[in-house]
Amino acid sequence: MNQTFFFATEAEAGPSTGRLPLRTEIAPEHQWNVSAMFASNEEWEADFARIDMLLEPLLCLRGALNSPSALATLFEHETALDRLLEKLYVYAHLRADENTADAENQARMDRVRSRYAKIGGQLAWITPEILANPMEVLEQWRDSSELAPVRYAMVKLLRQKPHTLSAQEETLLSKAADLFQAPQQAFNLLTNADLRFPEIEDAAGEKVEFSQGRYRSFLMSPDRRVRKDAFEAMHETYGSVRNTLACTLSANVRYHNYKAEVRHFGSALEAALHPDNVPVSLYEALIDAVHRALPGFHKYIELRKTILKVDSLDMYDLYVPLVPEIDIKVPFEQAKTWVIDACAPLGEEYVTILKSAFEERWIDIYENRGKRSGAYSSGCFDSLPYILLNYNETLDDVFTLAHELGHSMHSWLANQAQPHRFASYPIFIAEIPSTLNEALLLDHLLKQNPSPEFRAYLLNHLADSFKGTVFRQTQFAEFERMIHDAADSGQPLTHELLCDRYYELNSKYYGPAVDADRRIGLEWARIPHFYYNFYVYKYATSFCASQIFAGWILDGERDADAYLDLLRAGGSGDPIELIARAGVNMLDPEVLGNAFRRFDQTVAAVAEGKG
Image (cartoon, rainbow, N blue to C red; front, side, top):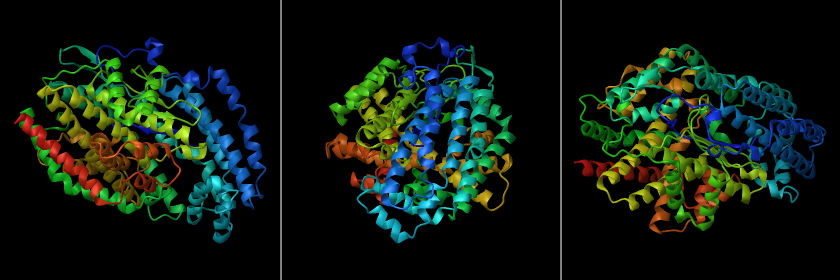
């Protein structure tokens, strides 16, 4: 399944006054145009009924995959089936995310997910049958003229040979795929549909409905009492189901470890990095580099404590702007203009396509009751590159818009330039265009407003971006490795162990200036990324790479052509190789070093502006 699905690093805010609107109360022009895929649910059903017709030619190839021409036929039929399944899946999950409590939408999603699992079992013999051939035969097939258009697919297939089981074993694993997804599905339904949060008082003393989508906006309140109340409401609510969430996370981790073991990998981490051909040493180098950079990060935390004039800094004090007198509310139309103008250095073609995102309604803008929290970009080869937001007119929301548009533009460019099999790109590359768009937006805003207060606000935003995208995501990555190692060594992942490990790691990352409420140890319970199998480290590595690309483009050192070619390349090569072809060597420690030097310079600029 090659649909793209890329998530923002944090759940962004939705409207923070009054009750949440119902889906039917959101204006159509503020909703994504899902009908561009299927005009009705009945059309979706008609295509769902076509699955068997496209599946049959693949089933007929069993026992006949004995030549390059047979494999070429296989790939052709696979593509036809995959394109249909991806479109069915994307429509179903978008509809389900519009209202996670809608039974009809959830049933449709369950059907397509179950069908994926069944088809996986029916076709699980394919890879073992191909790889049962001697390596020298496989290499001859890989280099044949018949398979020249899909050579890279063969390269990746041959890498799987040491980790592929027998046809019978692969079938058993594939048939259980839907069961293996149960922990993540339970987490999503519990946290998006079933959890109920209390009302809290806003800064004016008015009772408002609290939600995950509104959490960030409350943490940005200049009123510390509001921030504290929001922190307690969030973590007390999650704490009330901590045993259940420890169970779902533990089951997910044990599945990752089990899958790595049966496929003969040294660890779940190695197994997760293998499809992208990324060495474990890069993951470890990122954590080590961040550890070395922590003294500089602690200086920023100390600066925050000084500026906020608090005796004891807590975790709910880490999101409030350090320039509280700047009250910036950004209507969506203004955000749209800012992002389009900011992307001008990427060229006229890029900007023209970007404008179509708004004209063609790629974006679902505002929060409604039951809507999935957070933000993401999702789509497939035969759909628009859709974006889910929970927009609340904050500056952070504008940056989230730029971020997700980076993903969606990447999808659009890759889909236009590559055949279906190579259009979908790995997440390792995906976070480069999203964070580069944020860098362009920041540069644009700094150039548009000479106000010292606004400049300080933006510099602080950049520092906070480093905090959230590099330091925080690496903390998550270290925690993820830690709990997989703990489970692998036989330690039960109880909520007590998870809370203790998380609290200790949080203390290490944020340093002595933060006297954290013990409830921050529960934060693991609300992070969906821990179910995505070593996903989060890619935010940090991509952010560091994007800073280099953005610097080249903004300084005029290089034009945007090599960078845009990286986006157009999609998944046509190994991600480290494609990024290197564009000019950045991810295995060079200087890529990380340059990013941390920029962070230190930004902190110094913030300190100078507030000194």
